[in-house]
Amino acid sequence: MSDEIMSYNHAADAGASPFDQAKQTRLDGSEFWSARDLMPMLGYGDKWQNFHGSIERAMIAAEAQNCDVSRLFTGVSKKTMGRPQKDYELARFAAYLVAMNGDPRKPEIAAAQAYFAVRTREAETAPVFDPTQLTRAEILQIALNAEEERLALEAKNKELEPKAESYDTFIDATGSYSVGADAKTIG
Image (cartoon, rainbow, N blue to C red; front, side, top):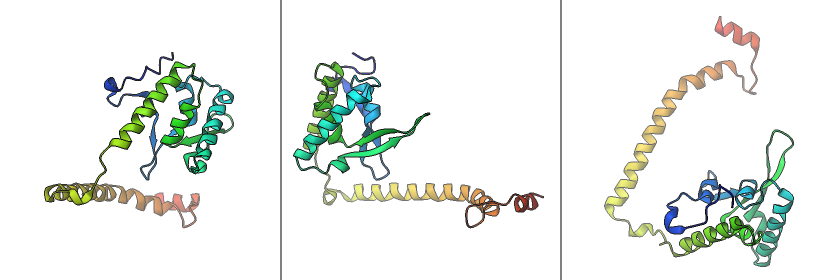
């Protein structure tokens, strides 16, 4: 078994799972895993050709369930030192399907299957957040936290404002700068 993957022990996990560490979050808060990042964790090393078969089978399984395959398996290019490599941003369900369609003889696949099965069950049984059940104190705390965050951002903007003004001095409306004009400004 790879040194990167431990057998999945939910009780001992406490958020330290390598699958949790590989998870990425977009600006909108949605989670995804890079297929290329998962590949070695699932025991495929750097053999994209072998791993891509698992992805294709997972896509077929998702399509058979009438899922939006392009949303679950978002095709992207991963930049490398050489030419760009094909990659996928896998939603949680897509990553789970990839693990389910991997080589079952690999202990890393078994660990991934256990991880995604447990996390899926946790998501299914987690209490749904109901904002109407908040107490006045909780609402006030949320408002206070939002105001503190707003003030911190406002302070950061004031700190960065002189830098932005300096930048605007050197850059014209098209994003270009004139070396001659900049030299005159500097003196």
